[in-house]
Length: 174
Image (cartoon, rainbow, N blue to C red; front, side, top):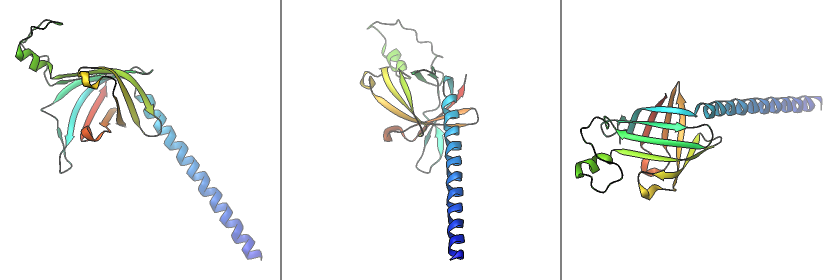
């Protein structure tokens, strides 16, 4: 009988110890997530936009991109992506007119902009963008999700939706 009581007591101690280790690990994981969430606000400059190929290798997307991503720390965000060297053109055209040359119209398609509200899905390292306006009228009001993580000072953002899931954007705080 004494052996059974000792064994029972040992099992209880092991279970309690195991549970306390699990709780400590959960708290540490939450701490890391909170610190990642706290790192997100600010102005970020695009360092690389890459696409994963069929072999799993990351390659520069469409010859290179540039841009900015802003999270204001409240609930507002803005994204502007542009073709590399977008601003280095001799094209000049007036704003808000219907008489733009075809070359200028083609050039304008190299600029992708949206502004919206964001919220962070806690525990998932996903930021959700609810687009308030967009350079593509068909994307106004749409909500998209972006998985985010940090490697040192670099913010890594990857679209969650299947259509763009092969993309990875690397940002450095400005």
